[in-house]
Length: 364
Ligand SMILES: Cc1cc2nc3c(=O)[nH]c(=O)nc-3n(C[C@H](O)[C@H](O)[C@H](O)COP(=O)(O)O)c2cc1C
Image 1 (cartoon, protein in one colour):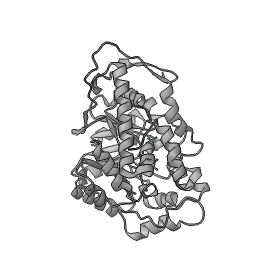
Image 2 (cartoon, protein in one colour):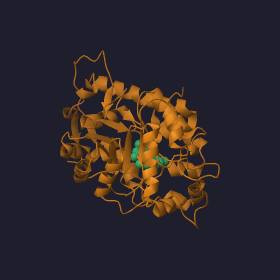
Image 3 (tube, helix red, strand yellow):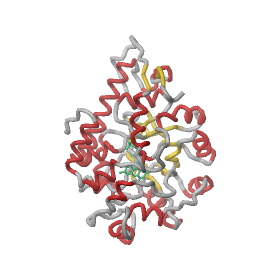
Image 4 (cartoon, protein in one colour):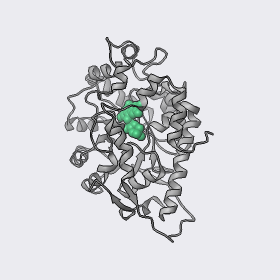
């Protein structure tokens, strides 16, 4: 197993292994990368107020998400193109996540097919959906994901167009020729291999293929064709979280896509409390963006999140040691969260209540 001191050290190790342009694709954000930095910085403005003598000898991190038991409130979000990290790509991520008893959400733009990912483990998994201009493609993905046994569809709503990712544009980023888009015919992969002119071929693909005309009515459309719950990923405004629920979502993920879409938006942890208040218990609220410490996870639980999702560190673990590396990242976060909970006086995740938050400097 990888010996992880902290997740920032892990990133430095993975960076040495990766092609610089692939590292840029994964690590980078949009435009000035202000939001990318803010996703981390926001945690430093939130202080915890621990409670003492609550008896924390027996602790449990277990919870449920949409009724599915998980060993801890840390899930693995959809991230495309994991073949950049390791030969086993998303199959390894699914296996490593299953070994730690939590949920993996497979991306539409995985390098392995959703059927291969589904077969990688018996654990509960979700499928993330991008809606294509050609609705038949989306119908087909929904049918395949349901047939393959995915437990929920995670509709990403923050990507009507590709964010302005300057690193990829500067690098004229292309998917390497040895990789395929596992869910699509070869012609889709060719668009990623070749691109047109300069710039990022991923951005060109997104702008050509994905439907920028989506509205809340399409969430209802998806509900009408899906036999499994729909989760809406990528809301930031409390009003959008409410709309998601009104249009049939079973859960929302507060997310700014890891700072890769609209720059200068706040960190998800900053808006979480307002979203939780607006949702008022009608659905589960999850959150991602910049979670790197056990204390980060504890803060989200105290602010009312059901669970968090941890993105890039999973890619660093995958790069360094495949499924075992993914597992090591999740174990490391489990240890950090367990210690943070003990020191804060929380024997269970339910004990992480709003009074644990001493202040949110600069956000009130
Ligand atoms: C390399 C990379 C690829 C991603 N691909 C997708 C994707 O295919 N679908 C999606 O909904 N989100 C995608 N995301 C966003 C993640 O699901 C998640 O919201 C974000 O990474 C969380 O932030 P963090 O990396 O700081 O933990 C991607 C993120 C990264 C870093």
